[in-house]
Length: 596
Ligand code: ADP
Ligand code: MG
Image (cartoon, rainbow, N blue to C red; front, side, top):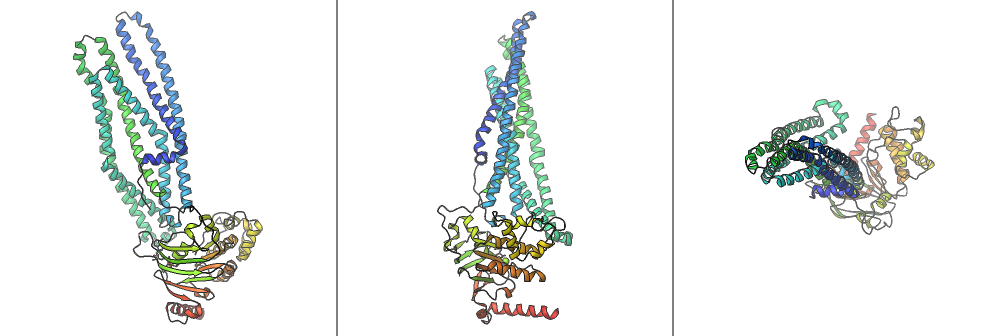
């Protein structure tokens, strides 16, 4: 996966898409609401000023009720705007989180198959969920909190300076201390700890996915199984990392910082009292008392406000890392439609000096492969396990792209064909095809959504699935995988062949399609296969050499290279690798016959 550094803000704005305006509106509303809700506090100052002005003739103080109305009006206005702001940010948050999920799914649709390889799928899902969830919290609450509180804070600071520059300076100092404390928490070392902590979380997710995937094996071998141990270790590593993280980042420093931020402003009260003599020296008793009332209230508001910012910043940090991590995933290469897509001319498949190395692998899986499958021909890939057969087949539908050299379909470089058009050309049958948990009808129709029932049925019959349909309670409409409707591996493979037949693609790729067949299924699968391959261009990977005897051409792959090439009759007597494999195969068959 390629890493491309983009700031979290840029990523966030990108995902917010057309909901940016709504987000900004929400933030602006919450800022204005904060300004409005300061007025009631200012009323305290106004009341104190008026009272002192009329003292001791309190009968003149009736007028202060009008401040009650003023405070009431602004309090209501502030609350209404705050509500409206939250409505906007919540909606924007929800839509942005949906954008992240939708784009993640769209990206997965376009990503090459290799993207999902090596148990990364659990990780991708985990990251997608985290990014969506953290972003939603960030946009719905944290950002509004931060923007609102900063507005409140700055306007109060300005007022402090207007009342008394020394109090303003003291307030600024307190703010600097608390902000410094806050930033020390998000600084380099903690960010690194956080990254480690999340890496441990990633490993746990991966190990968990692998563990769940291999559960049948785990059940048999219990604790000795690798995936179980790996999962256990990953959980332990995660717990210790998370404890360490809690210790280093949360418990002591966060408590300290919180104490600082909350505590700093309480000192405004003693500072105001220390300044009292000089303030009173001018004889402005009224001014001092009114200001003092104001300081007392503001110091209380400011300390809780900063604590809010601090929590919101923690959320910001989480969202920022989550966004960075999902961006790594989203930056992974996708199969894009080429700018000027070309149409394949026929069903010829051609490899021209193709080499391929898996990401991070030391040696190439394929080296300088060149061969051509003419339209209507059958080419078989055989050879020892790990020789590169599956890899070679995977390059045709672009599950992976060649590292060098060109794979052509119908005379056109596959990377120059619209991926959808390319997929339409190819039916691919895997060793163990998976059926979806839906009806047989829908499973087969997946190949061609517009196919009629009759066409699906014809494909099922061609794939020798008559016996399966007969034994299932609702025939084609039976849901697969529910009780009593499990199909054996061989039966599932025949349904998968029906799917390939229905697709009616000119090119058929078979990767050990018969490998898992049990004896009674084998003959049926062979028949289904001959229905599927008739008249088509076929690339067949086979374990059982009996199935490749009739191929027009056999390619023997070993360590990623073609070591032999020719027809069965030539190769079986050439004294090379194929001849040995053929001899071994016959011996095994002989042994099987005699031992039965
Ligand atoms: P075959 O199908 O002939 O058994 P493969 O094409 O599956 O061989 O494998 C060829 C080589 O590539 C082997 O060395 C194998 O370990 C390696 N390989 C296969 N799949 C992957 C993968 N997803 N990531 C990394 N290496 C792989
Ligand atoms: Mg293989």
